[in-house]
Image (cartoon, rainbow, N blue to C red; front, side, top):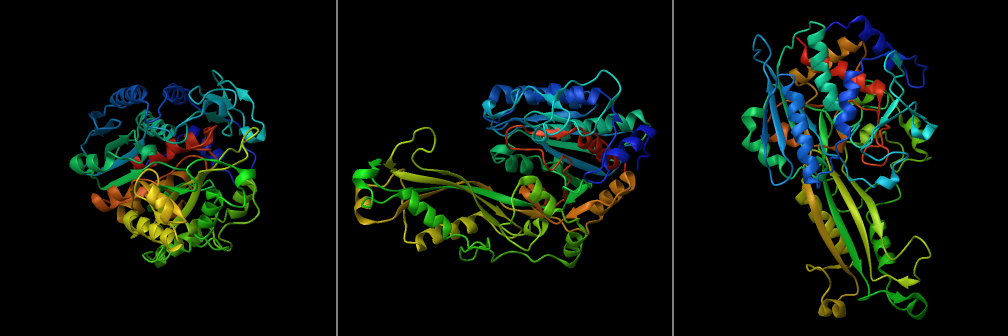
Length: 500
């Protein structure tokens, strides 16, 4: 386990201060931030193949400069990079780190001041009036500074923090105690379509004594965070049909069916006022938490009031249950709605169709196939005929009063590792000792990662280790990385790569 330098100890005392505490400026190296901002300047939306190729090439170079032997696996989508670094002494233990280098699609006009691939610093969050600042050539940097760019937090910042952890371990004379492997994909935000095949075909180069998935935000308490499972996910597009084309709302209002109202009624039928999903069997296969998992949840600081204040709402959807506990239940979410026109002058019409985009999250033992079948059965139970073509046929329009189409988009299951896994326990203990604080242990991450590929397919002890700030705006405009979290991540990862 590494022993912090004087600089490290000073820095940790600042970034681990309680939420809301005043923090002084901290001394920080410049090279890590310079490498990160250069990497962030390369656009990385998965559908942009030329720029994705540039990202993969840059990653290969960055890792080879640290001594990794890198393999680039070509897929129908983006390249997958697999690497290995065998330190002196050739330790028998191996640890694999998973990252992704693609980012969510962007709308440049939604970004404040600069585009999503023009990294800028602010002296505090944009929502708090943060001003654009320049990285000084020397001196201290306030850990509350934010670096704004797509993938600053999700997931390029953690990649550079990992490389910086290796650099710092070497610079301070702390030997790497494990053979280090990396797996990096460029299609995570597109549902990881190629990753299952790569993991199965390259299993011998990926399987390790411990697999660490570095993705997602740290617990809002600011403590180092380990998650022992991740939800699966599936999306769906639900379209409700009315007339063949839009109709004049004056001439045909009160007469022609309005699919927007029908869709609203259908969506409302899927949840009760307490937030519980009413689809038959939706919670049937949920695996109860173990006594150790319940204990870990009880030890997590309660941040619900703080989050509600930060996000600006007065009541939870599922009143009376904490956020971390609800991560262990499946979800049904409406992520988008569309019908007619809602901007500008608009058009006074009865729209011909209304569309909803849904996403469903799964917990251990619930499969995408089973949950999609339950959703489909619920829609039919509300009186809808589900069509199989792109649009209803004339016969279907003449026969069925309620017409809908349900299209499944992707999907993979959840995974989970026992909290009592010896290698996972060793990693938690190493971080606790190095950072002098008790890490948060979460049975399940609220978000989705391809956790199951490692825990269930490779059957390797697997943990998630999110390191970025909870208010990072990931997936949205103005994504950002708190500078304090970035340097804290370096020390967290250094503790893992040097643990005894």
